[in-house]
Image 1: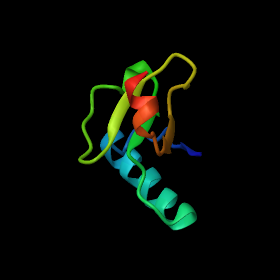
Image 2: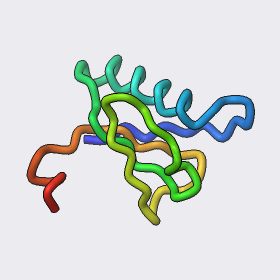
Image 3: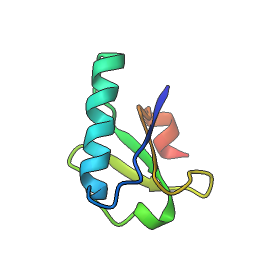
Image 4: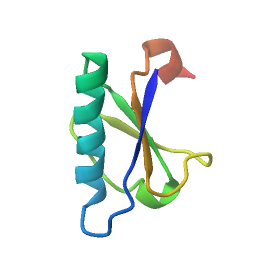
Length: 75
């Protein structure tokens, strides 16, 4: 299950936006996500413990955080 986070603020870095999304995910789901789907524009960032994947269907300013299991990682 993914949580979709939107933040188009120019004052906040992409890394911080993803960290905010992770924090909200932990609050709502009770576990730590391991993947974040982002737009290609936001793919040049690293967040410890999170795999960042650029996908065409995520619009700029949106961050999808969730848990990717081993079978999904292999695909």
